[in-house]
Image (cartoon, rainbow, N blue to C red):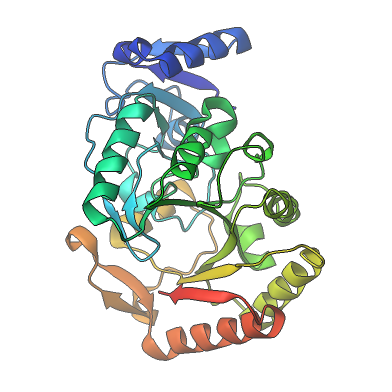
Length: 337
C-alpha cells in the first residue's frame, strides 16, 4: 500500500484516475497534485536515503503520453507500458540504472489508449503472434490489487487471436487475477532464487513460500506458468544453493498440473550507473560489484554492462540447466542470457 500518492490533474479525466483518487481518499492516504508524473519533487526526508525510501512507497497516478512501445527481447516483442517502478528493494535490480533518479511508482490511467496501440502492433505482425511484456519496468502485480490495470490487460489479450501477454513478479497478490478471462493467452511467471539471494538482496518482496503458493493458485486457474531464475549469482556454495532451490520448487509443485512449464535464466549483471546507485542507497550490501571479475558487454542505448566471464557464464548455464532437466524434464528453457 502506498504511503503517499501524487495525481496529475488530467488523470482525473479518465475513469481509472477518478476511481483511484476516491479509493485513496477513503484509505486516508495523503494525496498531492503534480503537473507531470516525471516531475515529482519535494519528497519528505532529510537525506537522499530517506527520500529514496519514501519514493519507493510513493505512487504517482498519471497519463502515459509516449505510446510507442519499447522492444523487450528476448522475453517478448514489445513492453506494454502499464506501470513503471517497483516497491521492492532488490539490490541488484536493473531499474537502479533506468530509474535511479525517479524510483517512485507510476501507474497510467489511459489504459484503453495503450490497448489501442497494442492492437496496432498486432495488426502489423499478424499472422505472427506478438508477445507483450508487462513487467519490463515494474513489478505490476505488487500494485494491481489497487489499479486492476493488469487484470484489464489480461482480459483484453484474452480476446486477441494474435496477442499474448506475459509478466514476472516477486509478489503473491494474485487472488483478484484468478477469475480473469485469460483464455490461455497470458503467461504468469514468478521470479525465484536461492535462499542466499532472496535473504540478502530481495527485501520488501514476498517470501519464496508465498510466491510458490501464489504460483500454485495461478496454475490451478489455468494460466500458462513459468519461472525466471534471475539473477543467477555466484555466491559461496552457489551450486548447492541452486540445487536446493529446484529441489524445493519440485516438492512444492508436486501434484500440480503444469502442461507448458517454462524457465528463463538471467545471469547477474550490473552497469556503472547501477553500481553507483546501489552503493549509495544500499551501502551495506553484500552484492559483488567488482568489474575486474566480469566481462564488459555493450548494451542498449550505449550503456554497457558487466556480466560474468565466459567460463563462469558457461558454468552457470550448464549447472542450472542440468538441475532443470533433473527436476522438470518436460519443461522448456526459453533462454539463458
